[in-house]
Image 1 (cartoon, rainbow over the protein chains, first blue to last red):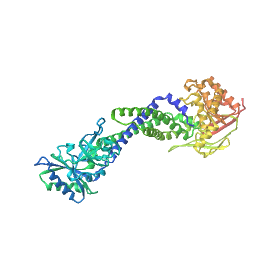
Image 2 (tube, rainbow over the protein chains, first blue to last red):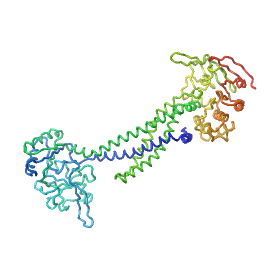
Image 3 (tube, rainbow over the protein chains, first blue to last red):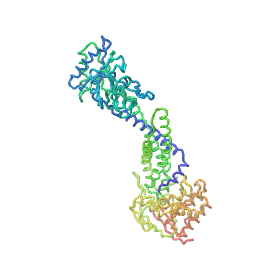
Length: 401
Length: 227
């Protein structure tokens, strides 16, 4: 029924066209399986939950004109006034804009076992007692800061011993002390852990350590300060206008700038990943289209070149379905050889990416899916040319060449 | 075996209608060897195409081995063609990319025979035409006479009710032509009905009966005794 033997022997005698499709199918599988994996990997990264109420947050920066250093009392006044505005859930200061992919990071070391210290790269985020509610964090154990916890060190972390306490995300606590260990009261870099919150990304988004955050109640007096405002749903746009006006009114002798929703920072932080997803998606579409069109073109060409042969087959009893089956089987065999080579190519490409780009190994499911997709592409692309070939009249066999 | 009654076939373009066959009637009995002759354009090939179920006809009736072919679907016609008719073409019409074994195999595969049955039939057919040793050769590696014998083997392998031969010696030299003709006569003597279209009056005379087609009609029926 399926003329595998004669088809393979015929292909062996006419290798060039078949080789072209084999190479195209192999390249398509190699590229598509790896590209699809990278796209999925990046999309998962982009879509993972941040753990903060990013949709209702915006930030702004204050630059003092007269006094280069911000005054803490002024900050308290500003934030109190902001919180009084209708539609504002809460407001706090921070050392950076959430999800902006910039901030302060440092190694935190658990030295409980001096012979085996555990160091974890950590996002250090300084804020005030309203930070928990402003960001929309969820407390797991212990407490967040109160107004008396605030310290005044020269840098974000300052001197750990001067801090009243430190709050960790569960991710960081697990990484430093072990999974689900009660970390309240434990010493870390000279400070005491007073609370644990659910995993959240604050300063960073794309890095491996993004959800490993240590919150510090520390006011760093410098020439530029970030205010974070959490709004009730639907109030963001209005408040992004009202809050800067209010601040300007409270103290005209300063500049309020960079009023931006946190979603914009997130979008920017993922820009490289979003671009890669777009580029790889376009590449996949192009590769699939080129291969599909290549198969269509070559099958049409073969059909035209073999019109007389088809006529002879029809005269000898081949139905239209049998002619279609012949061409589809032929394409399937060629594509299948390409798919086998493609799997080898795909694994080799992945090995390169694992070695040079810190990619993880390509899951088997991606290879299987790509194999099916390329085989299906081969069949679909050959469908119309095969149908056209099946329309050749058997009377062609009796016509002179 | 073959019963055509008042067959009409018209080829139409936008402006012209050409009557290739008109009121064409012919009966061929089982076991007969009939030659069909006529000048170029008389309608020989059209008759062959209709008799071989390669083309539909516009009017009349046609029964092949007792089966009315009118109104059959394409797949039914293909099946009937495959089971009842063996074709021998002027240009041999072997498939160039397949060796002789695979060429003879082509109609048998469409018939749905199993591998062992096909192999037996192919070997028998090639033995009948004296090409057993050439089974793995490509058509291009054979002489014209050998290619035509391979085509005859392909036509015989399915044990059809009748053979339709279109100028079977047209591309062969005299010696080869004689050998092929002797082979056809031998096949006929074993009971296979043969209808042969030819230009060659010498070959036509070797058939039991000669039909002459002129302007799409049967011009003369001459019953001849078998030689």
